[in-house]
Structures are given as structure tokens and as C-alpha cells.
Image (cartoon, rainbow, N blue to C red; front, side):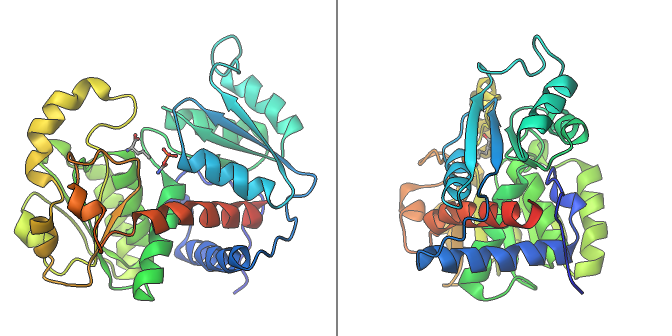
Length: 312
Ligand code: CP
Ligand code: NVA
């Protein structure tokens, strides 16, 4: 079956079939190999992308800018202070203007609705570079990293530990469910993902054979896990919740002792970064031999390049 996703946006991985995600991951491995040997194909020559950021970013911005630029494209960074987006101009109008000038748009910000409106009105591919709800491009890099480590995805086990209802946890559940990766959210009950998302992910998982669990039982959830994944305890925009999160999440800190509960020497540690070392993960784990966080960060660039090659 030949797959084409030309012209498509990526707002959430819910909209992508397992075959389309497979296609993106295969292309990611290919562009990474090309990058390693210095082969650039000028695939974005004469093209432009608007990179809109309402929230800060290191990896996502740099991945989009460098991936697009080294293939001959022209990325334009637009912070929220530079644009009228939703302030003096409606998002719909801004989208229609940007759609006349750019070949694609990346949006990072608060509301999932904003990225949906940009996609609906711009007429060009729009990529969700993180909203309060989802972080789909991150998960492509995570899946790629797991695949590099273990050679395959199907039947592997990932456990996300911590704020089980954040954007990364949500998207990871969807991505694993689609790709046949057994997935557990390990979190205190107050931070469980929305039941609607869990139900939807279980429907995706029926097709792939994945099992989707939500639990607060640390020993049970960690047993046999291939990749232990965590993220910050307070996401961007939730800084006022730090105190309550420290209380809720301290028992769920990823320590060496917690890693050992996987009972697997070859288990790896993943984190989307940036990390608050000493909070969600101890220094020895993130800096230790199981950590793959910088491969994962590098893979942001290759997966984002693959996404743009496939859709532009
Ligand atoms: N993981 C990630 O999205 O990093 P940035 O916030 O630096 O883009
Ligand atoms: N959950 C984090 C992810 C950062 C990449 C946040 O939204 O701040």
C-alpha cells in the first residue's frame, strides 16, 4: 500500500493511522542516516514556514528551524509579541493571511483550538508543536528512540510516570496505542488522564494489540517495563501549581530504585526535556547509563524533518 500524507496537518496523533505513523518513522530513520553522512537534498528550496510560539521552546524551535533551513527552506520565527494572533485580529484572519505567504505553519501555545483554527483557515499544513492538550511531534521522536534501542515497537512496554494528564502523557498514550506498544500511566489518582482519552486509546489499541493501563501502583506498573518516561511536574502555564504537585508527585519521582522495579537491566529512561533534575528524576538516573534523553532530543529534528518532507 503506498502512503501519502502530502498536504496534511498534524494536530494530534489521533488523526494518523498506524500505517501513516509507520511511514513517518521510516522516513525519520532515513533522514537521520542522510544527515549523518551530510547528504542534504534541498527538499524545502523556495519554501517558507511560519513558526509561531506563545510558549518558550529550545528543542522544538531549533528542530524546525534547522531541519527546514538545511534543506534550503526559509523559516520565520514569530513570537506572540510579534503577531496579532487573537488580539487585534482574529485567529481566523491571521491564519488566512499566513496561508497566503507561507507553505506551512508550526504553532506552539496554550489552546488546542488555536491550532485547529489555524489548520482550518490557513489552507496549508499546520503542525502542533505543543498545546496544553497534546505534543504529537514529541512522540514521533520518542517512538523512534525506542525503535533504535530495541529494534521494534510492537509488544514493548512504556510507562509514563508523573503528571499523567499532561500534553506529553496524553500524546504518548495515543501513539503507543496506535503502534502496539503496551502503555501504562503511573500517576496519583488526582493526575489521571481523562477517561474519554483512555477509552479512545483503548479503541486504537484493539487494532494494534497494545494494552493501555492507568495505575497508581508503582511496583505493579514498573514490572517488565522497557522504557520509563517522565516529564516535568508543572507544565508551562501551570507554574502556580508547583506546591501541590510536589506533594502529589514526590512518591513518583524516577529514582534508581524505581528503575530497578522494572526487573530489566536493559530498560531505558526517557524524558522529553527540559528536566528539573531532583524533582521528577534524580541526577543519577538522567545522567546514568540507562538514559537516552539526548538521543531522544536529537530525534526531534529528524522526525520533524520527516514530517515536513512527507506533508510538503
Ligand atoms: N521537548 C520539547 O518540546 O522541548 P522544548 O520545549 O525545548 O521545545
Ligand atoms: N509538559 C511540558 C512539556 C515541555 C516540552 C510542558 O508543557 O511544559
